Length: 355
Image 1 (cartoon, rainbow, N blue to C red):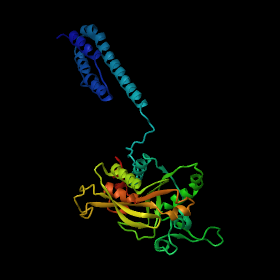
Image 2: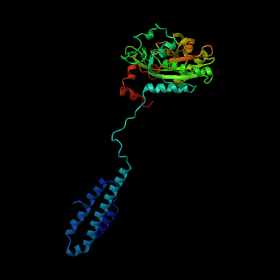
Image 3: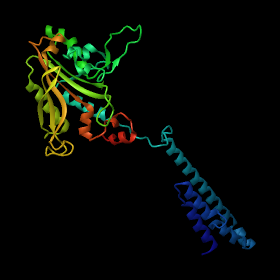
Image 4: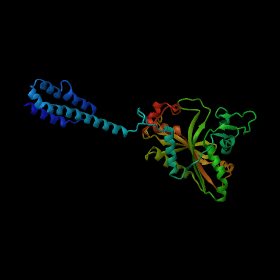
């Protein structure tokens, strides 16, 4: 191959050079224009030519070098513009560290599911204060004056500061039934006048009891209570509502049973069990080999409670039920230690990111 043919061949390759990043541009520079590059080696050979040959090929050699330098400069500029364009599309305000996905608390998940289930059959949410008076927590709910729940061993009473104007019996509510008494007293006149036909409310919230903290008990926990009052409400209505709830919460094959019990504010009263969803009712360690797990208490609202709240017990009847949110969460997620719900351990909470 003659020198002119080599110049032409090298010039063609220089014109066809391509690069997509800075590293490729640098590799091309080394290949063609470094001390040992192909263009530089060609110039080393050019130095050994005669004066006549130098005059013949000198201009072509200079054009080759200039074209190589120009082509590399163009490639370098193109690559830089491409990088700047890509960077301009990025959100430069984003944190450089991965953002961890948060989650709702497991108790919030369970509470919202309970509310959602009962809202489908007409229940609405009612709220009330956590700091209550004795009348709404105990008095209107048929608790006798000597009832153990009024004792300091079970209830957190709030001491009145000297000179403070407030009722003497102020306490942290021990159940959300106090919200039910407020709802009933406020709705009593509307029920009598016919302006309102029924009361159908859910009362979710936090409650407090003076108990030793352990894996199975805590000084505060969460409840969801329900109340339905209207004309001709029966125990069968209560059973049907609770059966619907159990199937929606724990599965279509869930069975329930109601065992006689006692509560001051309901008569008759019952405890409700569901068939163990872990063993299918066959018996396991979780249900203590019985096939049944207790989840809530319920009953027909005691006539004394209706009358105390200003509702005529001869005209109206109703049912009430109450469940611990932690209890339902234990059944749903099999959390054995109640303290985990209030310790804010991220390792525990991260298990519910996908819930």
